[in-house]
Length: 295
Ligand SMILES: [Zn+2]
Ligand SMILES: [Zn+2]
Image (cartoon, rainbow, N blue to C red; front, side, top):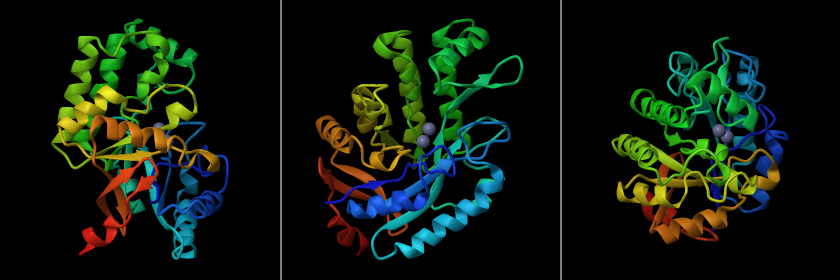
């Protein structure tokens, strides 16, 4: 039994420590594989993303760790890539040239303020409220609809291997501050998005960050959405979106227990340079399956 994590940040972006410390921690915990996915460089100022001039050094560093850790841990190199139409996306030219092992596509920005600033939907509540008022006239339904519309556009136009934290916008909705996920319009948006994903090979990650950061009570996505994902036979994987070494497998027991409850029997993991299905328990992936799927 062993865990894997493919959504992670280090100090090339807004993570706390050098990449090496995460690799050492993962190896010490007996993890099978660890993927680095720093925030993609942005063509505008962004406090938490990697700087474009550091991309080459990131590539060199992760490739070096791959070799150094080869006997103890499989290491992979990715980026968490924002999708902003006509600005950046999983199929931007510089992404193709970066020759990543896999891609994660995420929506952190929805539309722009009148002054051109991109509206960050997973930052401070104050900024969320500001954009909601100024860009969408205070209409939460329009804002959330646009968020899911962008997710569908990403899936149709620049589909990544992994859809990052698919319903992260719910972090702004504690105690149903703005809406209830039971409302018809919300469910319609989510189901349309899952239908779009179902026609691709993309994997929906179950991202535990909201839980251990105490922003949400469920992972991204939560139970009802996972039920709809299962119905559509969309593959899932468990990721922590770690920014600190202590977070690399945080709340994986919670996520795997939830997946079992919903009825999932396997999760995807990128092992030996390919996506494979593994049975799992609340203690980890059944790595014996590696031999059987490799024959
Ligand atoms: Zn993210
Ligand atoms: Zn992330």
